[in-house]
Structures are given as structure tokens and as C-alpha cells.
Length: 514
Image 1 (cartoon, rainbow, N blue to C red):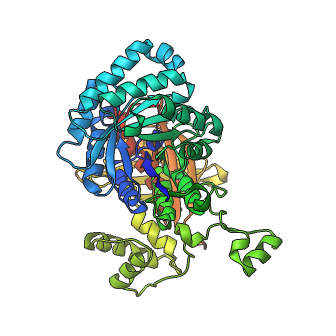
Image 2 (image 1 turned 180 degrees about the horizontal axis):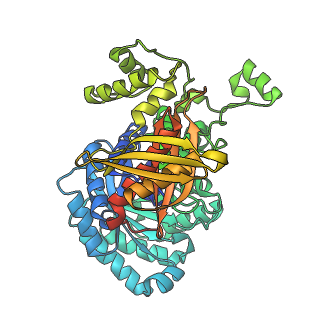
Image 3 (image 1 turned 60 degrees about the horizontal axis):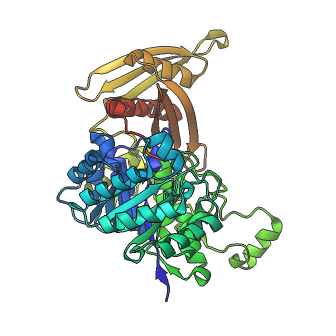
């Protein structure tokens, strides 16, 4: 009989630690609801002690989902644990994830603690957390550079203290599959009470082995795999949840494992996370890349035409990709739009339908052909949170200056609280440079532009433009995103979105956690 493997998704915590990624509460809830449809077992919603905003988002996620267990990260101290208790108070099916570093370099250089002190702090924290939670995951940070006998010692003590899940993360992506698997086997053979907890793995991709190491851990008896959608996260990222799930499903004949993952939800989940984080999926990315099911070689094309199984070990439909096709039209009504969303796997409330239908009609006035990707983009375009946005971009005018000296831009920005209008002007080498300088002048601020990306959502000259910007203030990065048929307008709106995120979180910048 196949054994069950559980999936712990940390996109909202470790994934958000990707430089430049700042998810607001609404976006975190949206991703969490999509993770629930995907079949994720545990959602790590954030780090409650990092800031009041993070704590509120953790609570919002826990209130929004019903099937997955929701946990928050906490360092091994009372204040962090209290923050999680407060954030999750009164909500069922929740838990806490407590960690402390155990490797020699972390003990000596980061913590300044002895082995005995680390064990004492771990036990003290787990015992304290056990007063409030039935589900307690404990992690030995940098486990793969820790002495194996010390891992067993810590594990045995925290199990006695009340831990129910034991995680041994490859925090810096240092280990190899064989070594990682052997580490877990050693722990299983030399830790009293290990049979009473769920063993978990959490792998980073610094050497490109996160998925391989995760699979090696599963083969060694680990029951829970941790990772992020699209493999995002600190440095080179985490194990990609969708790759591990697809591998266990495609090679079930070999691994003999069951999961709760609904593979057909993978594509939608990947696209949503990519949109909201601003991190594009590489075309050659396994499972969800745009080239994953593309065939250029004549030999491959001939084989696929005769039988797709010749060169496809999975079908695009099995992970939720559908052929983009022209749908609806200028005269289509609300019910037709709603029905098409349902066919694509989206459920809309009456309020959502009213809002998206308004934007859909505006789009049909400007675009001849409407594709599935267009209406999905309309539904998922939540770059401006009207409840939190201080400024909303309203209008821009551009003028090319004589003798190829550049552009002059005039912009109008609305203050959300009182509808007052702010005007700004600027000159630049190109239209975007001029617009951004005009915005800076109007708002009397200047952020350093680190990255600017624009891509088309669908094909055609009138495709919706999707713009991502990344700005920097001090050592902190902030991202902005917007979509519009008018790419100039989308560019300005994305910059305003980044400014709003900067203004909303600059006083409560979340702490980084490895």
C-alpha cells in the first residue's frame, strides 16, 4: 500500500523573503486560497513576530482557508511564540513552527551559544508552545551542517517536550541526495521517540539539488516535504512544490507514494504566484515553464503527432494547462463571462463579477480579440489595494522634445484618502524615464529603480501589457505590478504600486529569517 506524503508550503513566508517580493494581506489570502485548491496540507502563512502587518496577514490566511493547517514561524523565544498565539487565537486547525540553529558555525558565530544552551532553549520553547498548540513543528536550522549525534540529541529532547513534527532543513543548500537520505536514516535509527513524530525536509537550491534532496528524504522515510511554488525563496530558492508533486505522481510506480495534490491546479497556482510576486517563470522550468510541453525538433514533433507519449511523460492538461483560444466578444454578457471563468476553474462572487465585468467591457473597447489569458489577467490584477493605497495613478501626457533631446511628461496622481490631485512633471531620455521622474517630482520622493520588465499577456499587437518594477530604498526592495492595454499607463501604475508598498511597510519592515 502506498504511503502518504504531506506538503508544507512556505511560499507566503520563505517565498516572500525573496528580495523585492512584498505581498500584502489580500495577496497572501488569494495565494492561500489557491494553495487550498491545490491540495496543500500545511500553509506557513508568515512570521507573526516580524511586524504587526505580518501578524495580521497570518491571521487573515488562517481565517480564510478551511482544509489546510495554518502555521506561523517563530524563533525559540517567548516573544515570538506569544506573537503566534495572539495572531492565531480562537482559530481551529492551526499550529506553530519553532526553530533554532544547531550547526557549529551558527552556534558559535550567530548565536554565541554552547550545545547545552541550544538544547535548553529548544526544550524551553517547545514546552512553552505546547501550552497553546497541539501541532508544533520544530526545526534544527542548518541541520545538514550539524553533527548527526547532536541532531539526535536535540530531536529526542524536543519530542519529549511536545514537538509533533521534526524538520531537518538543508538551510544553505549544502547537502547531496545520498548524504541527506543517510542523515534521516541515522536520525530514525538513533532517536528515541522518533516514531511519534512526522519527519519533514526543507531544502534550498543553492547547488541545484533542492528537489533531488527532497526526494531522497522521502525515500529515507520522511513524510512531509516543504517548499515553495515555482521554487522561489531565499537566495537560489526552495524546492519547487509542483516539481516534487509531479515527480511523485508521474513515477508513482517507482516511489509508491500518495499525495493530496490536485495536479490540475498546478498551472493556475504557478501563474498566480508569478503574477503577484513579479518573479517570471523561466521558459525551461520543469512542469510549469512555457517550453515544458513545446517541441521544436522535427523528430520530436513527428513522434508527438503520432503519439504524445513518445516525448511527453505528462500531458499539459494533467497539470492544468489549457489551450489559449479566442472567447467571448464585445457583446457578451455577465453570464457568459462568468461561465467562461467557471470553465477555466475560477469561482466568482457577484461582487467580483461586477468589478471584473466592468474591466472586461473596457478591454473589449480597446482590443479586438479576447483570449482566456486576457480575462484571467483581469481577474488576477489586484496590483492596487484600494484600502491601503495612498496614491492611485490617474493620467499622463507625453511630449517628445525637439532635436531628439528626450521626452517631457506630465502626470496626475490621486490621493486615495481625499481624492486630491497631485501633478508632477519630468524630463527623461525616454518616455518611462520621464514619467518616473514626473512621479518623483510630484510626490517629492525618489526611489532607485532596480528593475523594469514588461511582457505581453497574450499574442497580438493589442495584447495586454504586464509591467513589473523593482525599486530600492536603503537596503530594502519593493516591487510593483500593473496590467493595461496601454503599456505606458501600466508602467506608471506599476511604479505607483511600488511606492505604495514602500509607504505601507517602511515602518514595519519584516525581519529576514533563514
